[in-house]
Each structure stands twice: as structure tokens, then as C-alpha cells.
Image (cartoon, rainbow, N blue to C red; front, side, top):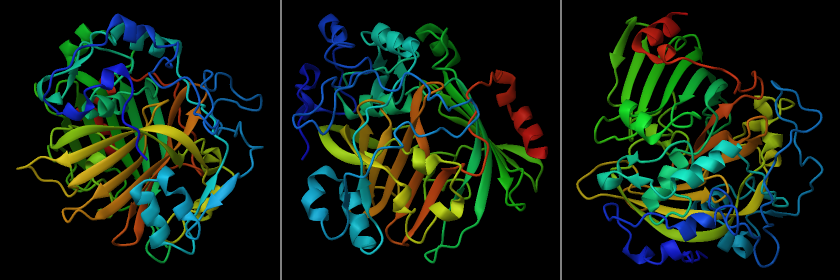
Length: 455
């Protein structure tokens, strides 16, 4: 059951649209951050029955057995399964599930299940993120039409969102570190479970989150982040590379993208790396704007903030993240191995995106379920042009406590028609993400992309 928004700033939720103007946060609303609301705008208190506890700061210390570079030891390893939801008892819990999750039980009645654990509100972030959120919350605003953002930097721009667009921009701009090197890959098992790994090396430079970023500097550069991806396997794809510059005001300058093709040995502009173009080597099991659960321009949809609900979502997925697992342990026919997946009850914002008349996308409607503590989309229900559930995406998050940041360790996109799925972020047999890098802007140019592809 979705609860209608109860915060003062949501009083006009029935009037939401993508082009309406809203009053900025008042001083009284800003004062709530860190009091009855967390520094990023979540409800500090737990729920009535205690199944969701109060937020007490999240994970603020690293486990004693952790060293930088390790796959992260599970701080909740002693937690036991409280109960399991399967196809036989799913009706008892449907109020805490999305339509897509319920469909998974129907699609795989013998194998899909959800092990429910104690809720741990582990999401935490550096103090400078909290401070910037409070500093810029009174000034942050969307550009005309919502296809960009201004007068903000570093933090969550809309800790008390009034619209679906504001909530989705919170997801896009959530803190994930500053310079990140990622290793890993993806797999798209067949219906029978066989798969080939596609390996990636990725670099991410987040200009928006830099500690000296200001609204003025971001407006001048018009860059939110820079992303570079190189395919490392299989051999036939190795060396293929992608470069993206994501802009802050996408009306002023749309996303800039380039690709390097090993066969042609040249860099080309790639304006189609957006919207519903198929994702890299994905067997067409995800769109470009599915990456990271949602990315890029939101301008093809009308966005509605539906309110909040309590929901079972993948969370604290340290078991799934562990280097004690092999990919064969995780990748099974139909879906990933449910024995390694942890679900918890959390409050989520529900945001519905409906395709605008006169525009095209393979998804006519998308429903996003966004964790209130982190602004990470954890579940997405994706509908086709017949208004039928098409895909269900789930992000399995952990707290990378050396940063700290709550971010997905594995994104899984389930295609209900083909009975296949795509798992992105597989790193159990790879080196761990490196958040200590200090990349330079010169590493994110078309010339750098050419050099990266040739190595």
C-alpha cells in the first residue's frame, strides 16, 4: 500500500507535473535535516511495528578485519533469515512487494524466493555531503522542463522532493565517490543457464561531488560527471571503448558521447548512446538509460511522485558481493541464486514515469522504488507499449564503508518475455573497486579514449 506523501512540502502532490514551478525549501524545512529527518531527507524514526528501525547514522566504522582493496566483509554476517517468501505464501506479503517482484514468483514458481533479514539502515555518507545538502537545499532547482539542474552542488539537491523529477534527480546525483576505478563485468545467461562473461574496466570522475564544486563552477563547465568504459573480454570485443560526458543542463548541451571501435581504429561521436538504445554487449536485455537503474535525460517522460511505501528490497548484499563466491555460484537459469540474496524492509519513494505523447521508448511506463536513506533506485518495474510488465530490475546494494557510500554491487535486469536476465557488476572474481584514484580531466577526452582502446 502506497502512503500518500505527508510532509508539508508534498501537500500539492496531486498537482505534480514536469513543468510546474515549486517554492524552494523554507528555513523551517531545512532545519528538519538532521533532526526528525536524516541529513539526506529520510524519516529518522522507525516504523510503527519496529520492523524498520530508526536511522542512527548508518555504518560509520569499517570492520576490524577489513583492509582497503578487499571485497568488503559482511558486518551483519551473524544475521539469520527471519522468513522466506516463495510462490506459495507470496500473497501474504504482496503489500510489501512491487508488481514486478510478484511477477517473478509467477514466472519462476519453483525456484524464485526472497530471504528476508533484519532491516539494517546502513547507508552513510561523508559529512561534506550532509553539509552541502543542507547548504544548497534552499536554492536547488530544476531548469525549465526539468531536463537539468542548477543552483546546487555536491549534495542531494531535493532532500524533501515535491515532484517525481526531483526524486529522480536525487538518484542521478547521489554520492558514489569522487574518482572511481571499477573492475568486473556482466553476463546474460541463456534460459538454460549457460553464459559468457563480458569484462569491463571503468573509470568515473564525478565533478558534481568534488568538495570545491560550486553552483557557479558547475554552471560554467556544465559537466556532472565523466565516464569511460573499456571492454576487456571476450577477445572479439576487447578494446571497444565508450566515453560519456554527462551535462548538468541538458537543454544547453545534451549528453556528449564517443565510442572507439577496434576494427575501424577510430573514435566516433555517439549521439545514440542514450534512451532506449541497447546497452553495451547486453544481448538487448537492457536499454542505455537502464544503466545504474536510470541515467541520462528524463525528458521523454512525465514524472509523478506517488508517495512512500514499505517494501522488501535487496539491501546489505555483502554475501552476494563476496569473493568467496564464483560466478557459477551466482548465475543460474532464470535468475541469480536466491540463497545469496538478502532482502530487508525499507521505506521507499515510489516514482512513476509515463511516456510523453509524441515521444518513443520501448518502455511506456516505468515505476521506480527509491531507498529513502540513499536515493538509490533498488527496484524498477518496466512496462511495454501494451501496458504489460516487460522487465524487472533490482539493484543489490552495500555500504562501501571505506568511502562511505551506499551503492549497488550488482544490478540484475530480468526480461519476463525471454525468461533471461542480465547481471551487471559481477566482480567476485576480480579486483575490488578503487575509490582512492585521482583522475584528471585529460583522461576523459576522445584522444584518451583512442589510447585506451588500443592498449
